[in-house]
Length: 110
Length: 113
Image 1 (tube, each protein chain N blue to C red):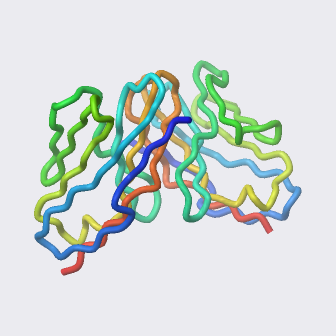
Image 2 (image 1 turned 45 degrees about the vertical axis):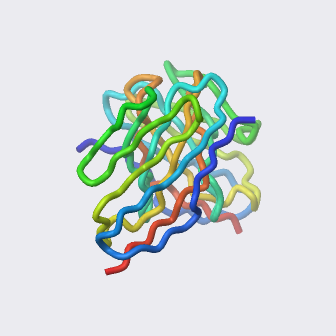
């Protein structure tokens, strides 16, 4: 059965800290790994990764995929209180559906 | 930036009643999806829809569920006879191509009494 596992489940840091969120996956005919940020409502798209070893970057956020070890990490440097959210990882295979993990709840305190 | 819009934001319904959740996907998108998230649990895939037909559905999407694109802009999810366990946040998503990132709406919180 396809599954996506995220760790840690919860993380509490102070502003300015750097965090690393982990995502491992087992997805049949894997094609892509996606990261989303969920605040109060809609999951907001962050990154889609399809190739190993190529870092995707957006401001203080970056992510990389390892297709050999079946995992991805999301890094956030110099965290801010606005980064507080649930970060969701999802795997996509050769069908339409995304398989989501349970998410990592990040709380950033001033 | 274009976004997926969903209505209503919150729906409260008696068990056994029919509900219709509405979504307006991003205008140039061709693939549409429904997911649900029971409180405290993972986001789960329900159904995908392309070219006016279901392309994939999960085990959750049984005969009580149906989807429709009644016109060029709306995409609806109908639950025929709601059960208590249908209480969840329902998200609509869309993507321009079948392999692109899915963009989600704010969700409809469905509460079954």
